[in-house]
Amino acid sequence: MSQSAVVLEECGSESHEEVRDNVRRQLTNDVESFLLGGGRVQQVENNVRADPPKKPSMSYGTAPI
Image (tube, rainbow, N blue to C red; front, side, top):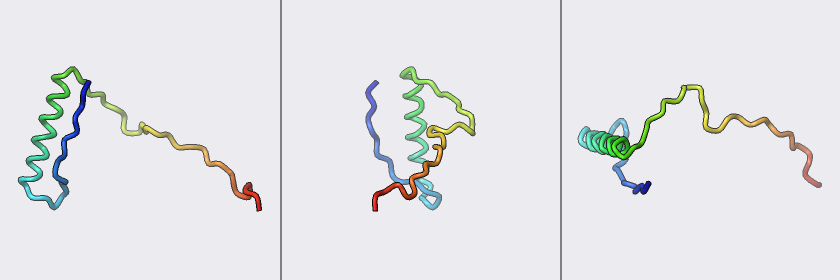
């Protein structure tokens, strides 16, 4: 599936209402296009991580003097 990047204005809590509305509208359109194109939304549990924590490695004092 071909995906194209769309540049949106940066939207923060202090942005003008018009900017936030434009971002919301674009996001809604993008989600609808994704779903109409056969995409699916998968709900993931809150405690699932993409990168699980790694075991710490002990490398102190291993470098040559």
